[in-house]
Amino acid sequence: MHKQKLLRVQNRALVLNSIRQHGSISRVDVSRHTGLSVGAVTALTRELVDSGLIYEKQEGDSRGGRPPILLALQPEGAYVVGAKLTEDHITFALTNLDADVIGRLTLENPGIEPEAVAQRVADGIHRLVAESRIQRSRLLGVGIGMAGIVDAETGVCHTSPILGWSNVPFADMVEQRTILPVYLDNDVNTLTLVEKLYGAGVGSNHFLTITVGRGIGLGIVVNGQLYRGMGGAGEFGHTVIDPHGYTCDCGKRGCLETFVGDPWLLRRAAEHDRHFNTIDELFHAAQSGDSVVLDLVRQAGATLGYGIAMLVNVLNPQLLIFSGEGMRYGDLLLEPMRQGLYANAMSTLSAGLKMHVEPLGDDAWARGAASLVLQELFRTSARELDTVGV
Ligand SMILES: [Zn+2]
Image (cartoon, rainbow, N blue to C red; front, side):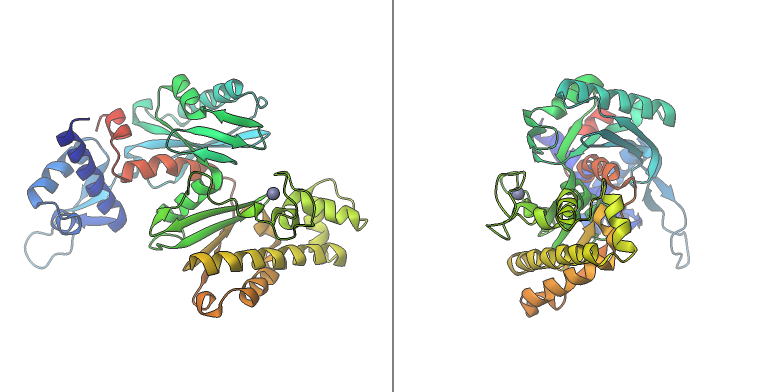
């Protein structure tokens, strides 16, 4: 892209982000906040008003004379689709610029063959847009979240244990079928992103999102940025706690996941003569006070806390966000987790630590995936701003 045009697009994203962060703000304050001249801000905001992404609100604080005109984000100015892939189904959400869910859809996964899955994702997007009656030209792009190691830059899924994929250029495959910009990332990273942009992580520069469910996920925000390492950062569930423990799906022994993950809880329960077909059954047994199951859940919590203590010592976060299906155990899991954490982390590092438990709604994962696109809009990227023609 021509350098001058790139600069303009970057400045436009800067202005848009400043408006998003403040809710409503005057042009003069946008100028102060972004360091751009008032003249430049005026020109850029005119374009944004014309494109329908922001609007003018005439309810500024009046200190005599004319009240200043405030600018605010137009949530319905554009839309994005988020999709979360799992082994048996695909959950879609259509959101506005505030990440509010406008439409939702769940389709069965046609199997694990990448071409078939890509086609099902494209079909889902088409159906969702049609059912939600939005203009397709207002659709900025598609975000897709999935478990596994994903290169978010190239949209290639390097490894997906649950789908058995290796080096699948999945974002490209969906892009070809939808002619929309498509972003792919690890699902826990997408949850972390939505917390950072719209949830408990707003204003927090150092936080961790820890998900508990089938496996254990970790999203890391350092210095206000999602930390990816070489692409695979966050494989916290596969840190070895007991080298003599059970052999994990990853091939190592005694990973954290083998103490806390759903399939492992079921297996451990079976070894104590508690045979459940589903994790729901195990959960209900814990709720109704089955002491054997309660002990397993407590042990899972304590082991998780022990693992998190290491993260706290290494990364010194200010906030931990807990999410995932495992949160339904509530304090049955979280109280032993807290004890394990505080008993093992350095007290100076754990003393000021804040914790937030996010009740995981059905939309959370797909909404997280949608935020992959929203992030691009509010960051300094040119790609989909050009696509939507703003
Ligand atoms: Zn493992």
